[in-house]
Image (cartoon, rainbow, N blue to C red; front, side, top):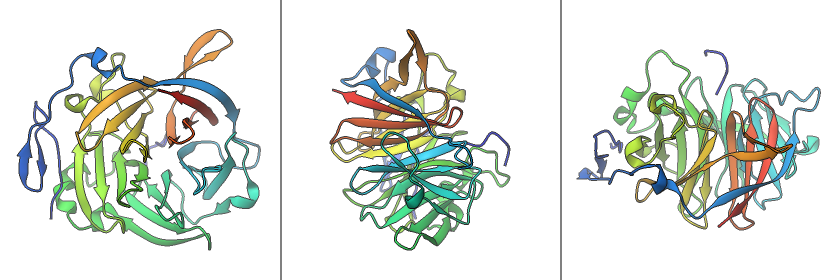
Length: 304
């Protein structure tokens, strides 16, 4: 998210018990209980931490993260720089694999299921940008407001942007559908068809389905990054202000676990500040996180 001011049916959750619509039918979503219910099987261990804002690169505010097709490198964006950055898995920028793009204010990035395109979200216009990797150029830009079924979620997007627009994007590699997340006011997870022309469904991210933090007021909880877990068919959602990850089951509409982004720094336990991009590699058991504030890459081992 930027420090300055600046997707014929949508599925929304809004009642006290988390009622939502699925294909036109009401469905009750059980409320999540106290904080202990979010204690799950996973834990994170920091393996590596690396500053990535080398002088002259313009990678000062990394926001968004995704693995390349074979999991050997990472793509990220900086919301004030018109560049797609490529890094190795330790955070060293690969100049030959990075390239300029005629767009700034990019907040999230994902790789298409076929590995041929990058998808990015443009916060100011709430648009999804498709980028041809081979040709290194923009193919199409599609605002949410121009997608089919936008009327079902339009009320969550004010006519005058409030700097609470799209922040993250990821792709379900099992069915090629795309997910984008609205940062807050309210937090909203939106499912798109593979072409990003139709809004298929959406979910409000609330305490009723498990999105809460014991040290943060509910209204302040935000959502800043997404990564689809192909091994578990789940979604990992980063929170900037929560300084944590939520492991979320879209099918059951509930958080399975919250993991605080903690690491040891000279004997002191600290939290990752402004975690704005996440990429999960379930096969290798790695979680990659970028900090917007500190311009750092954190590499965690995912135990469990």
